[in-house]
Image 1 (cartoon, rainbow, N blue to C red):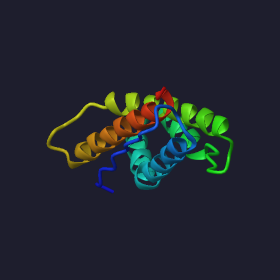
Image 2: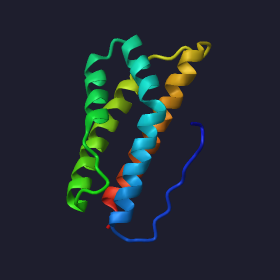
Image 3: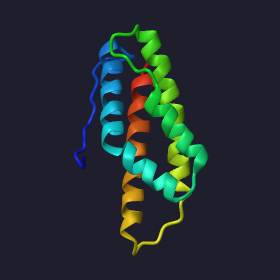
Image 4: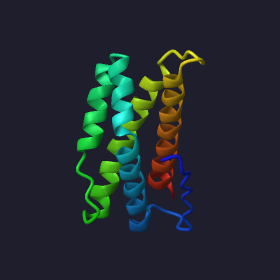
Length: 124
């Protein structure tokens, strides 16, 4: 869960391989962090963000879909990830609380996923 996965693409545009890598990273993020993010958002009573998380988890992200469909779904995922990040960043922190370390960690992971999705989708 704490592993850093760097993506390095040599292709100058969003290829099928890049899109598949984006799907893989997003799926890994959701597998590792969705329940933690849900707990944080529930604790802070962030109902809109909880709805965004539900929408993100329920996106139909099939590896065998056409590249244009994958790109469209990843665009939607990026929009939701950005909204979730805004919700997490808006949470006030208490540096003594261990739960705040978890909140900051999830926020950093959201930044990572947003950056990865931006790289995959905006490569030209």
